[in-house]
Amino acid sequence: MKFLFLITGILLVFFIAFIFSNDRKKIKYKRILIMLAVQIVVVYFMMNTSIGLIAITSVGKFFEKLLAIADTGIQFVFGGIVNEGEISFIFVALLPLVFLSVLIGILNYIKLLPYIIKYLGLFLSKITGMGKLESYFAVSTAILGQPEVFLTIIRQIPHLSSKRLYTICTSAMSAVSMAMVGAYMTMLEPKYVVTAVVLNIFSALIIANIINPYDLESDDELIQVDEDERVPFFQMVGDSVMDGFKLVVTVAAMLLGFIALMELINVIFLGVFQVSFQTVIGYIFAPIAFLMGVPWAEAVQAGGIMATKLVTNEFVAMLSFGEISSNLSDKTVAIVSVYLVSFANFGTVGIVAGSIKSISEKQGHYVSKFALKLLLGATLASVISATIIGIVM
Image (cartoon, rainbow, N blue to C red; front, side, top):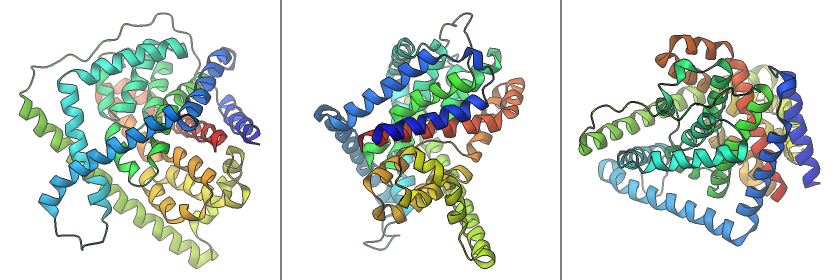
């Protein structure tokens, strides 16, 4: 049955992506099958072998340690604000982003992250058959996140074809940054977060190969952004602190608005239709969740969470998921958890389009034209990753 749902989930994605494909004749089926096979091997290795489980556990403990270190600064500044025994989301999940942003800034400053990204990108290119630029960007966005990741190819963005532009934007929406991983691990099981980060790299490229297939006439050499005069170390640390704090404020503001808006919609639906909005959209997404491997008895609840992520963002969906996850099976928890670990939502489309537009007005216009298809591709990539995890549960 596990492999039956693997087939139904993948076929669902392929069918929808095939309908919206820009050029069905150029779809690289061999390349897609190779990447699917790699994903299956990776999932089995990470979830079913002692080495894989040790690796995932170690990553989870590493981030727990980082969050504990970040908490020392949080307690010094805000200690005593929250009553003892109580938990505040902004303190537990969001404020640690400031420290993680500083850590990433330091790794960039000493040139360790660019080195890792470059050679992981080259290795990924050999496996996937994708261009070096696309592979490099796919790894970059899984570490740096957006909008910062677009700066790594700022010199190339104005010269990219619309097809290559779609691929990198799909990768940007399908991945999550390392800074956000720590926050996600406070709401989801770390092993699913780590697995999703790896799977999403391949899932985004698979979708791009179906919706947006193309042949590369020549693969440009990787061109790093022109470096300005190297800033002093402590100035870089200060800039990273402010970048991290801006991220905290942005996410907190979005949560305030979206959660309140969802509550308003629920109140309206309960008053008029005697049913919550999440239940309604849950029924719409339930068949999709079922084809991904979610038991039918839990499909409506899972579908409601999936839809919530799409119309709001992953944080709102994760908070809602935390309220019901204890009543769901392990398989449903795994599938929904992996599905939630990406930036595939309406709000992110605006961030991506705005980021590209700030670099090139022309390219920003292209992104705006295929915005809905970009959201579709990123969502389908999440479906692939979530379906893959179901075969080991």
